[in-house]
Structures are given as structure tokens and as C-alpha cells.
Image 1 (cartoon, each protein chain N blue to C red):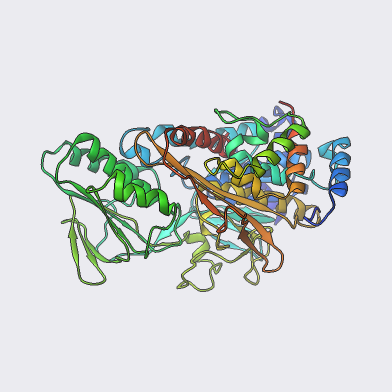
Image 2: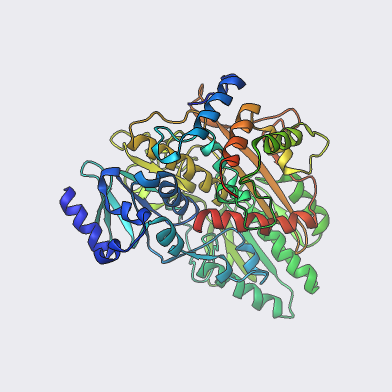
Length: 435
Length: 106
């Protein structure tokens, strides 16, 4: 098996001659004695774990192969700013060149479909197999189907890329038309990726309407949740004051079906809403490779993530040793998003390096959940939580403080300074992940 | 393995030992490395910032530690995100983080 997989690896590496001329960090990649880690998904979780395994592994770093269906990753972080042309899509698009040249990560473009954890082989849709000692799955999310919903007409824009562009174009067309109308955004039941995202997006669109002066036009936010999921004070102020008369926030409204041609949402209580622009964000599921390979024992559970040990993100399902799930598809109960996925990836990388050397795990990992977000085109806010491992419950819990009794603190007000911080924060988060 | 229950003295000794040993030959990862890596989302990989946020690499451990302790105890500034972040760490954790960044070249 080793010989076979090694041949596969070299074939995929494409150039054995190139190895001779590379610096030591790259040469180390050819030795399998330090172990082989295959990472599926090149977003904030996957790219970070690949980078840190190589960065921290030093001369004894394992081989790391990163597999993604796409050659580049488009960040969801800042993607709401593409909708009003504050940022371009290309400015939030990242390739894997740095991971390959600076850290010696091997990149393989392909769609990972399944794995055999007895033979320790990952299978790609094109028939290729990749051998691993540890498999890290960071596939992001899938969506629960909604009857009638056609994403080529009604964008979710909840995985950034062409969907973001489609929603941006529809909003642009709406803004350039003289007739009033409603932009309807639907937010799904928690837990979701980026819990502030739907509210930030409603504000972005409301700000476009307010700045342009488009009388009679509104943003209707249909939230399946009983209330605002995150930054309650910030968004309550935004909805009731900053965008009073523009944002119509309706909690506890669940989508039953969609008429994608007529842009109509039917709710579970029988109401109908017709939109000029309709943005439906469906409820989430774990990524396909996690969901369809037995890593989520109860596919109907409200917490749709895969159960893992938060000390190393290894699956707790029997027979799945050496299979780790990080990012939005893991089910620790921590908030979901790129910042958190990056933090989980470092805990996972540290743990895998220890496991490969037979060392004990770090029993005190922390993972910060923070985000900086816009409220208007000149003001922003933030949210901060620190999760720490609790040995009693064997779970990640929010660290509380006397002046932070819930363990989650949001900016007291939307300010211009906080807006500027969005770009300082994201520049370092992007670089920490992809550069 | 550093637990929160270790005394400051123990933490200091382990951290100083780590300084004397090159990372590559060390049996266990340097203490504080994993904790400190969770600052990188905002402060850059290894504390080398590429934006307007402060770099932490190569600063003296004492300086970083004192500054984080000051932020931690400054409860009259709820608008400072660093107050809330610093307050979520124990002093021992803050010291390990500070020690780690002090070993990274600027």
C-alpha cells in the first residue's frame, strides 16, 4: 500500500526532478516516515491546517496534501462588501501558491468523495486515491433542499464566488430601476456559518437604498430564528434607528417553498412574500464528504455538525480514528465562520503533530471567535468570544468575565474606527490562512 | 503540558527551558505556541502583522505581558476588544503567550 500510494503521490507531485532543487522544507515533503496528512477543503480551516502542519512540523513535518475542487478559494468574509461594490470579488480570492512554495504543501485539484479508513485511502471523483495517516475534512457546508428553490435564479450567496456575483448583479439592476420594490433576505435556523451575516447583509442592502434615496423600497428580513442570532444590540439599533422604515425585520418566519421564477417565498404559516430581489439562505448541513461517510450519526439533529473531540478534532464515531473534522462541518457547538475555523485548524495541526510523534495532546486549547463587520458604508462593529477546553464536560465553553457574563461581547456602538478595523483584521486573517 | 493550575513559577521555568532549546530538536512543542497562534488571526502569523494592527513578534515578554494585564484590568473600556480578549485568559496563559512572541524574530 505504501509503495502504491507513494507512486500516486509522486505522480501527483508531477515532477520528481523539481524535488532535487528545492529547499529542505520541500525535500522533507518526500519522506513518508514523518507521516502523511491529507486535507480536504481549501477554505479557512483546510488552508490553515495545511500551512501550520508544515510550519510547525519543521524538519520533521509530515507530507501534507491539500485537495480542493477549485484552484482558488473565494472568502465569505468581506463578501457582503462585494454586493455594494465596496470590494471586488478578486480582492477576496486566494490561490494556494504560497502554501506550496513557502510551506511545501502539495495541492491536488479534485473532488474528494469518500474514504476507506481501514486502508486509509481518500478517493477522488476522478478515480485517484490518496493515502493518509491522518485525514482532515474541512469541506464547509451544504444546504438543506427547499422545494422550488433554484440557485441559478435565486442566489444564496452563502458560499462566495459566482453566487455572490449573481446577487450583486441582481441588486445592481434593482438599484438602477426607478420603481420601488422589496429585497427579501431569508435567514435559516441556527446553527449557521457566520451568524451575523444575514443581519450585516440586510444592513448593506438597506444602506444602498438609503444612500441612493429609493423611496418606497425596503429590505424584508425573514428570520427563521426567534430573534437576532448575534450582535443583538448592534443590529436592533441598526434596524430600529439607522435603517428605520427601510429594514422590516420579521423573526420566527420559516420558508416552506420558493417560486424561483416569480421570486415568491411561501412560509410555513401560509404567507407569501414577493420580492424584486430574493436571497434565500437555506438551513445548513455538514459538507457532503462528512455527511455521506458516517461522520454525522444523526442526520436530522439540530446540531448538524460532526461530533469530534475538541482536543484534536478527531471524529468520535467508532472506526473513524485518524479522521478529523474542522470548520463549519464540525459539531463542537462553537460559532461557525472563517475566524473560528482558522483557530480550530491550529489546534488540529498541533494535535496531529503530537499524535504522529506519540506525544500527549495539549489539554488546554483555546479558540477565539471574533468578527468585525460593517453596519453602514462608514461604520462597523465587532463581536468577541473566547472558547476554552473544559475538562469536566470535555467540551469547548465560552470564557466568562465579571463584565462579560455571557462570554460574548459585542461592540458598544457602530463606529468609524470599527469599520477601519474590518480591513486590518481581515488582512491578517487572510494572510494567516493563505500566505 | 501546562495546566491552568500550575504555579506561575512552574510556568516560568518551563518557558525559560523552552528558550534554551531549538524548536526542531525539542520533544514537545514550545509552551505557548498554540495559545499564541490564536492571536495570529488579528496580529499576523507568528505575531508579524501585515496591517494596521500591532505586531507582537520580538517584543519583550515583560512588555507584552504587562500590556495584556493592563488591558485585562481596564474594565472602564468596554469598547476595547482587547480588554475582553485579555480578560478571557489566565495570567499564566498571558505569560506563556508573551514568552512565545518574545522568541520570534521581528
